[in-house]
Image (cartoon, rainbow, N blue to C red; front, top):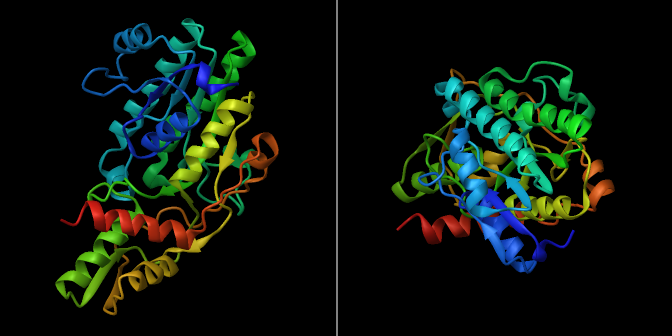
Length: 312
């Protein structure tokens, strides 16, 4: 599929991942890219989605819009996260089918996997148990797009794909401590502690959980490769294949700021899922994706962007 000749709707195109996907599309030569804004189109409402598709006339939809946040935000808004993410995905895919869209690219979440999935996570493990409780409503809402994708392909021959990105990080991430994920939250906390001479930094949990991180530009590249080359409803993991503990992550981020104060682990706060690391074989086999950015380089680029854009 030649993207430069397609009309492409990117929901969430002004957001963290979406802005990088749009940049990659532009580098591919895509000229007809439509980026809806929430103030103009409420993707929870059916009539708004219909109006969006009439206005943008897409041949491809890349659905990245989501209501997201870290563990705290998920715990405070389980109903909201479930309802809005479910309706956005289900209604958008249904209207895409009705409008005869050529291809629908759905992005799920690592939170869809069962809480105690064996490492590395294989796509076949998706239905082996219930997700980790703090983000289960969000994870299950997003996973329904996989069910829908497979059902619609079977009944209607509708071409949709379902991708499962691991935790993302990079420039233009969300650094708001009320809703951010772990890497931007640590960057902000350690930078603030270093700048203000604070003797300690408090982090959630006990530091034992592990996570895998994918640099956002690599994820954008994976989404474009899948859009061009992949046409099946089998879910596909997108990751780097590297596992790191939260405790080790804290040591790395603190060293980037030469912070030598104490790290206090608040064990009254939840750890989240015990371990996360993906098997990334399918992405390589099906559309030739391998993460290219090392964690060290990606982290340095993220910190550089933060210091240049959000600390003035």
